[in-house]
Image (tube, rainbow, N blue to C red; front, top):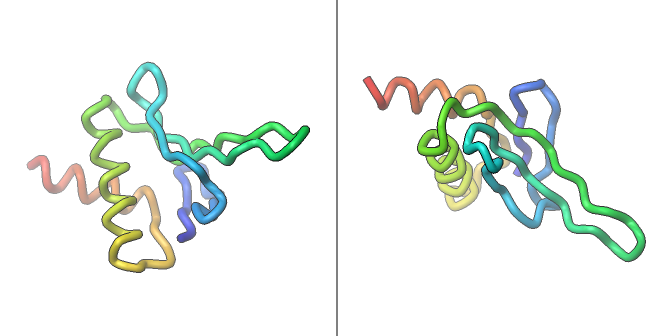
Length: 86
C-alpha cells in the first residue's frame, strides 16, 4: 500500500516493518528495517494532535490494508477522524 504523507511524499508501506507513534504521541512514522551495514529509515506520515488520534490513524491504515486498498491519503484519513469526532 502506498501512503501519501502530510508532506506530499509517497511511502510504500510494503517496505516498512513498523508503523509507530513518536514518544510525544503527536507524530506517526513508518520505519524500514536496516539491512546488513545499512541503517533503517523512518518516514514521517503525519502530525496527529495527540496520542489517541495517532493510534486512530494507525488503525485507519490497518483497516485500509485489510480492505486491500492500494493507496491512502493520510490527510483524508485525518479529516475523517475529525468528522467522526464531531
